[in-house]
Length: 470
Image (cartoon, rainbow, N blue to C red; front, side, top):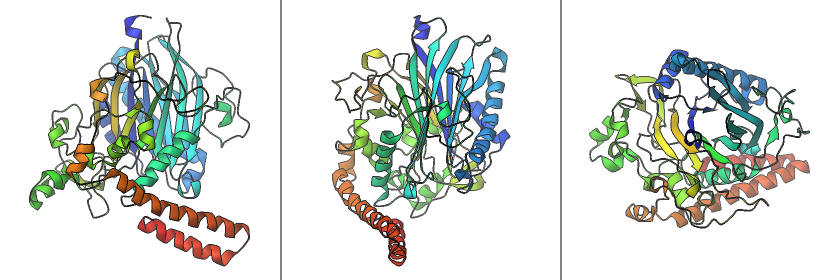
């Protein structure tokens, strides 16, 4: 394998569209500004809240909404790389509830620079009563350069986790993450769509509900399949424990000025490229705290995120601009937060180094209260060391020499600086979640034995517990 084929350039993009149609002109132009000059081989686009709750129960409807966004993306890619006579096409596409994910390939002029095969799809739900209001969808495929013998495998997942900030929601997000990483298993195209028996389809579209009789392509492997690149992105909904602007600003007037998200255009020199002006600090970020918690599930997954050097991606006032810039919608229940994230399994060690060209967000899209996040990255061809054994158990890896830029950060001193105790926080919120789960269990018990009035009382109590975070 040649040196140029020892790595694979990727572009990853995630956006919560807030159930709203997106302007082709606005989203398309801003997407073009974020794309690298040299075309990546694979581009993965994940969308959350594609459609209304009602429409999310109908796969054909959610697929139509994803198709509209796919059209915008493909037109933007064609404009960006029009002079290179490349073959740009959707390789695989999947929806689950209001979640959508598709993979685009940019091949050489003759379409033979690389090939993909064995497109598999997985999904799981973690919404209220395990509905698809929240959950994850994933696409797995194999990739190889045409002049090489070896294949490598990618697993791309898009998550949408429990929202809100407060006592119980952090723990529930961690539980959502744990549940999705353990419950998603992959089936062939025929398991989720009509037809599609080809082992190397040019395009895979999901048009029908789940079929309990999967095709022979199913591998029944979880998200962290051994010898597979794993990338997880989406609206993970992790919040900040305090308003990040209040930490770095001394007076209320200065804080007010920072509520305008100025200069957040990718490709333009701005405060977004200056970490000191991005207001990010791992000690106030719930996801960083969960990744650093030695007793937590997320730490065991060996996931890493490039350094954040941009301002929070949530929550913005919809349809409102201040001198062309979006305005944060801040109140007691919504701290500005980095909800939209991209993580990858980073146990490459001696197998290669991940090269991050740019990790950023796109501002100025007023159709949603979120901002998209993208990652321009080059990964080694060889997959990272597995954290799951062939028997399906978590593996204790020997010490892996990681790129210092992605080495795990010990945030304990930072946490102490802000007088927070990670373990105490987790123990406190876990109690409330167990209470809600117990009520939910008795609710189903009474429903089964047709004790309707008791079920009604418990359902009301459950709603109250959920509302106050218990």
